[in-house]
Image (cartoon, rainbow, N blue to C red; front, side, top):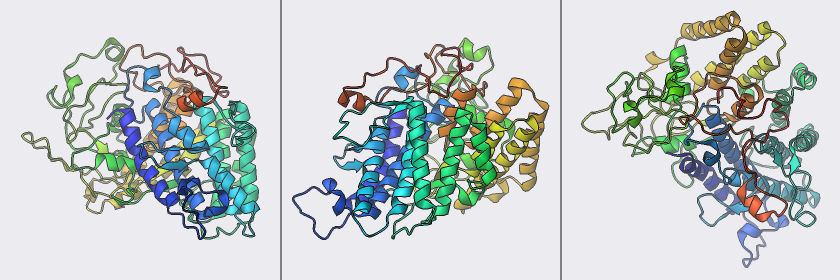
Length: 570
């Protein structure tokens, strides 16, 4: 499945959920001549507006995470050259969901309202009401601020100082990345001031922390931490760490939880909905990540990936051009000369390498599917069911495993430990945080095994297996130097970010590591994207914008050499 198709399918779940929440608004004096999508702020239910903010935010996090993971090789990228793989429409829906109102991605003719629009509506309701909606406004500001940070990171610029003021600024200019960061930091300060007293949630449905303002303040500080990592602000980073009020444990993890309903709405994890179907799996997994984890004997591999086959053509099974065309090919020099895996990973880890643009063969019942973490699928316990006479036999299907009750990881405590490792001033401290990050990651991933009640638990890694793995990684890190040490740290960080790869793309541009990632299938795919094109819809509608002609503009915190010299692996 190519990126555009996958994006459309993945958006559908959260868009439907958002539409159900928004259009179910009940009012006592509704003029039926007015469209429900055009309710004035004083007619809208603040709790439903907050629902819409949360679902738009979760949908954006899913979309941005996909893009970041593809470029970091955590997920598979479809496309031989970067410029055509990420055209001007890449950020259209993300931009709309952040700022304004627009049609949903599947094109059903229904309106979805942007985060900023609903935040301003909430502020208007609060100003004209005796009820205190500080909680609604506070957490909406947190989500809007995070979106501004990410738009600056991924596009290089964003609308900040002139956003949301259509009367005075009908065609807002885009602010430079540093200005956007300043505005986002100010929003976090405002949010913290609103939430610090623990305001009443007024019956709102908080989809993340069930109305716990203190938990949201930890998120605020954690967003600050990730931003200080990118800008190199060690003093501010250490000040927050010293205060201790940030995401440190699994119970604090910032994540969006999915359900198991297939219809009205489909609230399952989007990857589960794509891979656990009567017609087989539809997503290709990343050969680079699967091979890295297989070679390392990573205890998370059976939770991340669910194999439908025990061997892969061209690796440990005969080449088969019908179901894996590249298994018959001779790798090109930029793969062959450096020992990269061009097509096939052993042991049935059947995916695709970075940039493979081949067509889709009849392999839906053969390719590796998403597992129990984080998508709520099946735990891999070697239940291979291929019947060579009937390729329609598969273990994936509706309702299997966890039924899709997975998560969208946003900020996990394991991520924060890796950030502490990035900011550490000694190799010994980095090793300490590498260890703690792995301990937290593996414990969380293993906890998802219980979602698959029918798994064979004998295939789960033992406590000794986990300890040996972590000890081995830390020992290898301590024994390594230079690029080898940086690569090992980055590989483990990227492995930990599986399912929530937003910060992987940032780290890759910040450091250039790991240099061990697979090259693009195409020997000359064009410069690696340092930022993305402006959303084409905004370019069309905003006379102050002219579309970029390349993906080489660098975000303000990316002070590395210009493309194509950096990142070195590209």
